[in-house]
Image (cartoon, rainbow, N blue to C red; front, side):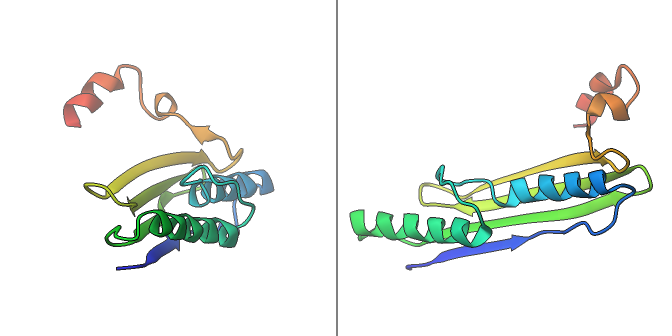
Length: 136
């Protein structure tokens, strides 16, 4: 009943065509896995996790009968890569009380030469939106 569950699975890029691209990829991952939950400002993942634990403890002090705990899982996975780009998937599951848990998933494509995020308009030919929306 009284718990904080935090699980973070992520990749660290050790190779890319350029150091700029490698650093850019790792910065994108770092920004995602350490994104604040309750607007806390921290410098390390350990501080970030402790901040979430402290937030839960404060909630339990104010509302001792609060049922359950806090849960947060974040995952970063490379779905595809070649010499030119990497497609990275980010997903999150969280429960901080309330009626239901939350989940979110998004994808980022990164140019492996420059480290720049690639937009959909750069991946598809003109007029793709209508066809893509039909598929979706």
